[in-house]
Image (cartoon, rainbow, N blue to C red; front, top):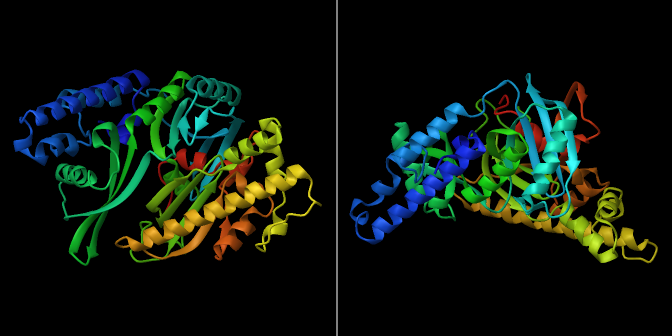
Length: 435
């Protein structure tokens, strides 16, 4: 399989061909191994040259096809890439710049009908394509986009390997070790990794790498819907990585290259259509997970319970005041109008669910080798527009929570979209920010 970075650069036709080719080759090798042709060659056969090129299961012919697609796709203006955040209930597009800090130059957004995105995956491709085409036609954005991934079928792991300096050998070692740490068949996944340098561990010096994997079928369906809208994917990235780039503030969080070994870490939350959670050391993501709870699922629940249109339920949630609940008490009196009371109860349950996921994630992260203490918790996203939401989360966690938004450049045009909806899209619009 092609890597995440290579897969994202292909046009839709080449993408489908590469995925199909990789799957056919993986199946052939699986059949060969079952017949005794591959077993004697051991892991080297499965993790040799293909892994060294970052291609996974693709054959030499498949690798040539991948490289040819990378060279020929995405022609045009390479100076502007639009960050595209697609979540349940809404999508946001951002043109950003980095001049000392990341800032938004232009932005636009649009609501999505229920079911278009389900738990971060494409539910109705034609509706998503239609919404994307309308958004980009209206906003007159450039057509090159970097798309975010956030769902249960994306995985990030930190691996410590022998201090290998040769790139091909390191890629093969990553592929070999990843099969024990990535909870999905590597033959049906796209895999990418980033070396973080050699670190001292109780076992001696080790090359530390962060590995990201995603199921290829899920990536293909998303990229296909984007391509059908006339957009050209210039990259696919995890939304968690983009969130860190957009909300990272230097100085106290990290210095130098953005990763201070043994230093305090920051937990980032983006609460929108769903919830992105990441623990980072400087700009390096050490842990991430996607939490199913989000405003869209809550709005759907409210709509169904009170038999009201979804658009009205979404609007009601944004106008709820949770201030009275930040002391941990739940308002249950008859003084509350029925809709407001139901919305408060749903939001309070969501705050508790997120707080539980944060505690579980911190405990899991701390238990891993090298898991540092989380010193700072940062929250962002549309949920922070709800009065009292951040304070309620802080009370539930018993830890200070800092609300952050991405910076808006002088004269930035947001087309009526609130800054709280733009963090992930802004992070996707750039590949790196100053450490």
